[in-house]
Image (spheres, rainbow, N blue to C red):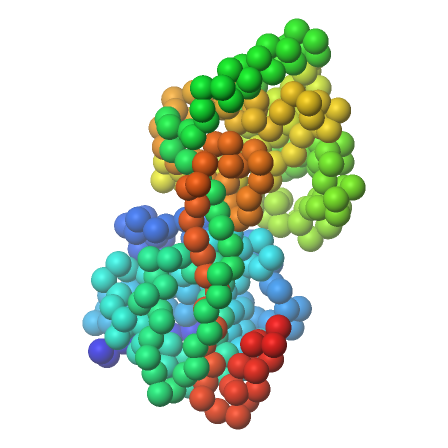
Length: 329
């Protein structure tokens, strides 16, 4: 009990220092609950305001919640590029603590939405309250694997090595690099994507200027954390895997490969040949991000992080209307 809530509309240096202190101490720290997310994240609603909700007790920070407020609604900040929920909380937060936080927020807002909530938080957040209606649904599956133990069977390993040799012999020399991701390299990524199957499938992200700006913002704000795995044939870029490296993990941001080489499984070739480099850099966990694909399943098998969207509605007429609208959607 006795939790104090504060809402900030800017991240001043003192607040950033407090936030970073908790982030550096937290085992669930990731790029989407890092202080820089407040600046770099996109807003889903043009009229919304960026806000940081801070919960503390007896001078100790318990929660930093990076969100956007629009009307009487509050949602985590960053959709549609939010791969993990932008909530940073101390492990000692109990169900009753969360109930106090949610009910306090519902005094200000009619609806609160926590997207991409990890399963370990789900139980604590599924509170029983006479002040709120709660709705939960599965939002995404995020494959992952341990870098030293990919779920690639012997037959698949042999096939990937054979494709690597064929690419080198028929179109090479083949080279694999792992380098800091710069703004200049974003153009290389966009060019590779334009030669992939993504445009034909309506999934070419770099055709959207907002995504271009988002990627450049990530590179600028997450200084030194953004890296690019790049495969070239005869010096020409043909495949890439971009990600953020943090706490001995690599979280994927974007991947594409030239469709002319699809028969060689270039995505698998790139990732497989990156693994020894990642091991040398003490990267233990490879996180693909939301969504499943053939390439992801080759390495992760059935290992996925399950995430949910939680909605809390104030027990009021406006809250009831929001509840019904959300339920229909």
